[in-house]
Length: 138
Image (cartoon, rainbow, N blue to C red; front, side, top):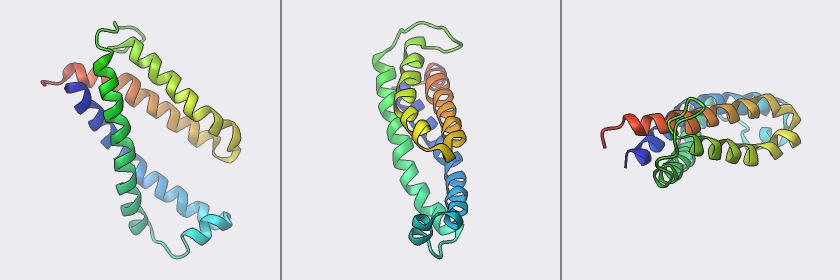
């Protein structure tokens, strides 16, 4: 069960990190994008952060719990690549690539940010989560 809790913890950490970054990016984008300007006409950063935090909490922790269940199922994958479970790390790398690659190719202005998010997802879920699950006392 430590795997599921590790997924929740990693998901919550990503929620705390990504909420202010996404709120600031949306407020900056409001000045240059007509669509975002109409969606957020007079929003301040605090109210936007509260709404984003609620949504990101469900998204990131949900992903973490599902990946935690998958890590529990892939127990005994062997150590490699600096990870406690090499098979799980490679699965998360492939999943991240499959999900983020189309967005990286299509959304050219956001390419650097999307590559950064992909690397953080890979490091947090693929590398850190197996170690947290191994260190847990459950």
